[in-house]
Length: 152
Image (cartoon, rainbow, N blue to C red; front, side):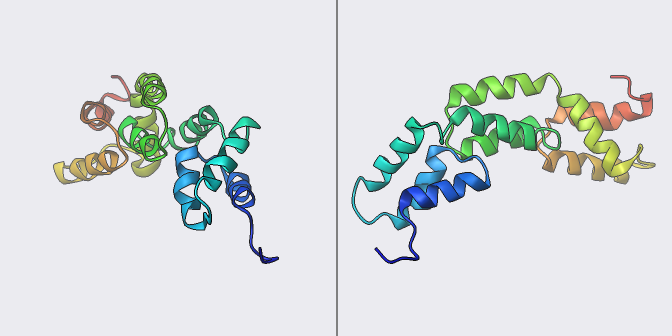
């Protein structure tokens, strides 16, 4: 092996040093660098046994980083893309639903500051919240309810 080439384990550790990665993400990113069949699985098994790969930490990291700015649908989509267990995703997303209106209202306040003056402005606000992954009923409560001074 050449001096400047990293082993699969070294590449995995470099990726893990940047942020938490799920096993599925590491497999996808490192598969092109595998030279022998089974080499990647062995390296990832070793890292997982030593606690470097932890699906629960990945889940918590995504929730911590993304939930304040995104709705349940977008957070769920990101967790699914990371290849995490569906049961863990369902539990985490279930917990997020309880705070969705408050989180959407905070995102809305930061972006717009107040209610829109006309239907076109309200539509713009609704589209913005929709692209952030908030549910339709949540968007309606935030945009229409904003005229009620924050009362749901």
